[in-house]
View 1 (cartoon, rainbow over the protein chains, first blue to last red):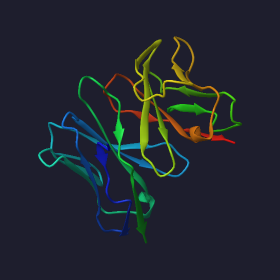
View 2: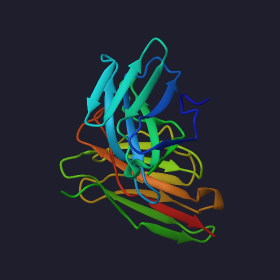
View 3: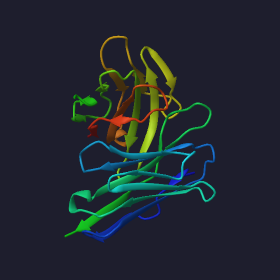
Length: 113
Length: 113
């Protein structure tokens, strides 16, 4: 019973173009969503988050969009750079006062020069 | 600017031995979370602790696994009588308050021979 789903295991994009990573969730109690970036043999690094009271949050090249009715969020990276190549995890929390995170399985992004 | 510290980074144990994983949260953070990542999987929540208290251990196996976060010193995740299925990357995260963004350490990679 996967509550956070990242259906694309991998994504390849050319440098300078837009990368769009998608995430779907099933638990309507989730009210806070985060994206983490992870390099091999390292811990996840926090990228950007969004609360359920918003539908968009932007930080530099990274923008997260939230569509609550569709239970869908996406991370846009523009312009993509080779250093963005990593695994991106979508995570969600909320409901009943819990603050633990539920993660998707990740999408590996490869940005080629 | 010290982030979350975990040690050891790599740990090799034989079946039946004990594994102790340590986590020092970021300065000013009193909430600690442990997650486990199996190969090709996302991170799975194990346990959430505040100083001297276990807040949520719903993700932790009932047997052989225990966690603590004493008043002084790091948080410890202890695995007794390890089995091959315990081989995974174990990540610790911390936050200043519950429900806030979690920041991850580099992880401990446990290999059970």
